[in-house]
Image 1 (spheres, rainbow, N blue to C red):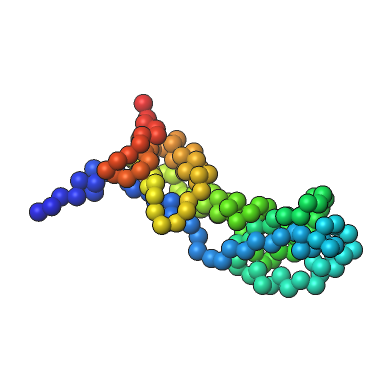
Image 2 (image 1 turned 90 degrees about the vertical axis):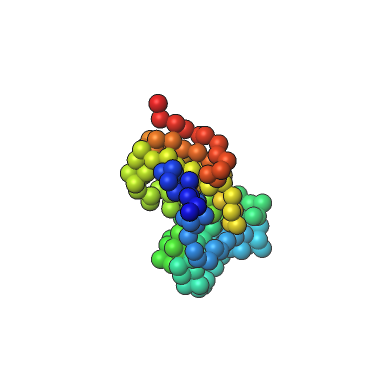
Length: 165
């Protein structure tokens, strides 16, 4: 009989890809709300917000960005956030990459770290989906206070990250 030494070792393999939420990602560019794409005029800006069908963002993960070379007052982001809040599942300021990082951070924050108390944990390092570097930092900060050891990689080849003294 073949024995799976990884299963009998007590190691817990944690794959951050499993925490990537499913759902559509959308980027809203603030430049589309600017007068001629370059200048914010409050009246035009408010009118564009009022006439936009925000329901198209229902249950979507939304990144709010600005690719225009324009100075944008902070209240403009507040107005857009106010319009998107009833619809977007998650709304962040940034690009699609920032959105992916934020979604994983939210998922990692929801992990019950106590489930990993005194465990030997390997955070899987490669897979089919891109996992932002920030997620590896977040999982380290989440688990280090409770785990016995934290490693990166695969069971056959790990890089030690932390070991409780």
